[in-house]
Structures are given as C-alpha cells and as structure tokens.
Image (cartoon, rainbow, N blue to C red; front, side, top):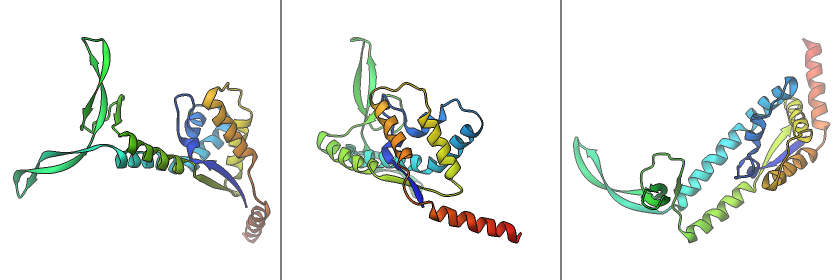
Length: 203
C-alpha cells in the first residue's frame, strides 16, 4: 500500500511559516480542490490537536513552579492548603518608561502576551524533548477511500502560485517533497478495488 509520510513539525507554526493545516484552510479553492482540502483537514485534525496538547504538557512539565497557600473547602469549612502552581511571565506596560515590563504571575488566565517561565537548564530539556517529538513521522495510508483526497491536496501544493520566503519557503518545499515521494505499492489498492467490484456484482 502507498503511504504519505508527513512530519509532526509540518503542523507547528513559526513567525514566518504557517502550519500545514492553517495554510490549507485559508486557500481560495473551488470545486474538487476545495472538497479534497476539507476532507484532508479532517484526516489530519486529530494529529494537529495532539501536537498542541503535547506542547502544553511539555511546557507545564518544565515550567518553573512555586508553592502557594490557597483556601479550599473541607467538610464545609475553609482551610489553608499548600498547592503547586505554574509560574508565567506576562508583559505589563510601564507608564513611567513607556515600555513593557515583565512580571511573574501564577494566574492561569489566558493572555496574548503571557508565556511559561522556564529556567535555562529546564528549557534545554524542553527543547530536546519537543524537537524529538516534532521530528516524528505521521504516516497516512493512501487507500481507495483517501487516494482522491491526498492527490487532490498534492495538486494544491504543487500548483500553488503563492510566494514563500525564509522558513515558509523551506517548509513548503518539504511538504511538496513529501507528496512527491508517496511510496509503496498499488497492489493492495488494486485488490481492494477488485473486491469492491465483486461486491457490486453480487448486489
């Protein structure tokens, strides 16, 4: 059976490169190309979600943590309990200097300019584990059910007229090569098609 081999990092964005699923979702497409794109996004949706979850798990694993006393209810009464909390860095505008200062917070509320605080040694470990994970392969079987979808998206990439630069250009080239290097045999696919035809004749 033929397979399409993608890399996990195809689904990770950088300042100058959109993730594969994001790039596909914003393309202006018509007819069959649009349908192939929509169905392909469903094929990779679970992996894209998984990658996002793994990143958060690793960030929380290596983030700086502090212990705080919090109020909790036990047997109907409020008591003090020690709890470990993750430390974040958040930008705060300084009116005196006219610049953004960073301060620490343990408030988990989402904010656009908030990031996990990770010490240098822990950050090295995070980067090592994260790099190993995003280098993993994501293999999709090219079956009779997915063939048209995959080759439809291949055509979208290979005929794109969008201009790319920097990391975006490198990622685009890698994705194109992945589609061009679809490997395997058509034997299993032919057998499946033959079986499908036999079933149609029986009906």
